[in-house]
Image (cartoon, rainbow, N blue to C red; front, side, top):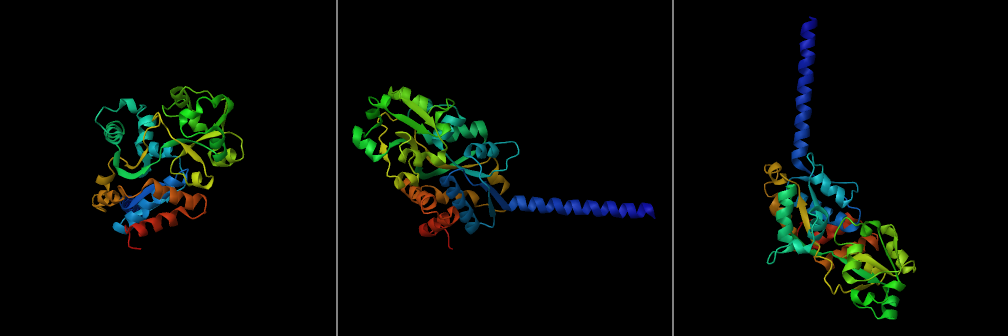
Length: 309
């Protein structure tokens, strides 16, 4: 009798394990996972994916709590990825992950095509089409500074740099990448009196309050408009393009081939649809007007006619 009860118990446990595993597999096969970014643009871009995919397929999309773009890429390209798709930039992928600068791109080959091929080769990830925005770095000053020194280009800073302080987030002062502060000042042959590292969320307030004179910005950031910053022309073309691209983890489309065989085609609907001006307007709505990134993304898709409701 005891043996019979033990056999029944073991069979029950086995059945429950099979059901649980089937449930997990079912969820994994029907749910995409993305993360909010550590700045508005990335978060907005990921909600664009959520609402588009949920409108056009039977998948659900889970946008998890904030994670830096660096860590999102690490997750997406790990042996056990927890991130399926992320927005990134071909210029960032070139400098940060391929550890190269634009001189590595062969003549006649676009930055995007070069990065797409090499990211696939080294990390297995797929770059989808360029969404349309170019969120490159830019150097900016307050209007009064531009007027005082007659500043229009980055080269105009060279002669007066010894009188000025440059302020930016800590990441811009790293020597790890080829497109940051130290390479920039070397390329332009300038030397500032001081440089100051500051929390990225305090940067705009700090330059407006006169804590430093010159800063680095993202060209699609809506806060540029709020603070009326003057963007100086990069007349030496130091900063590469930063074309926004969605990056899909290796094997994503194969894994969802049954649940959403049209997934790639759906994501491709965003190719060329988001201009720099579009994204600047959306980040302004989030960072200045304090609207929800999810609501802003949803409204954008409705306006573009990419979703039904």
